[in-house]
Length: 227
Image (cartoon, rainbow, N blue to C red; front, side, top):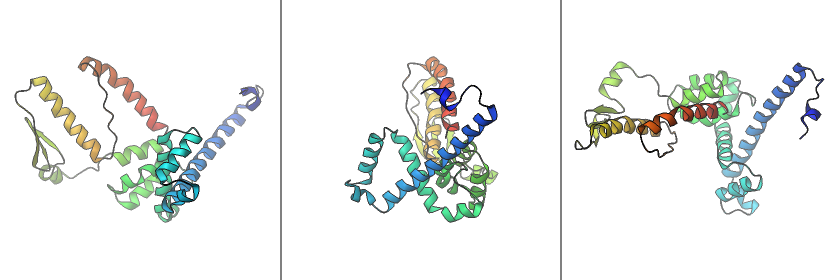
């Protein structure tokens, strides 16, 4: 594409900035439109009218035909499903289609943990990144809750969930391995509890793991900021 056709050299910076902002707004509206359309097809089983035996088959053909990433399709579907389910609450809050539709994919998770009014207030005012972090983290518990009913606690070579013995780490393992399991197991359990996705990556040793951790965290942060 010849970029000078869209942005000739003599075009004012303010005009270019305005075009960028308008395009972003239109992209957000398009994502919500696609999501609602996908949700309607799924809810009303309209895939049958399109010659597909299941919605999954329809979705597979769709992302293959339009050369679109599969994960994006499912994320947009979740956006549409959440919008249709909570449309009245969103409209009462003043939420509009340009407020960042990808925030809707985190809405159900947030409602499971927080007060409803608080969630709908935050989805309107927070950025996509802020709302995603808000939905994923656990609410602050009172001191009594932490003492009497912890989600997960590590005691020597034993791991308890809500005061019940869940995992016993073999004492014959070397110290480094026992420490590794005491760190990894709670992290895995907490991630699953939040509905997060765990991607195992094989490295040869802890030195490689430490070198790998920093660039991965940077990439994940960029990915989440993009919504």
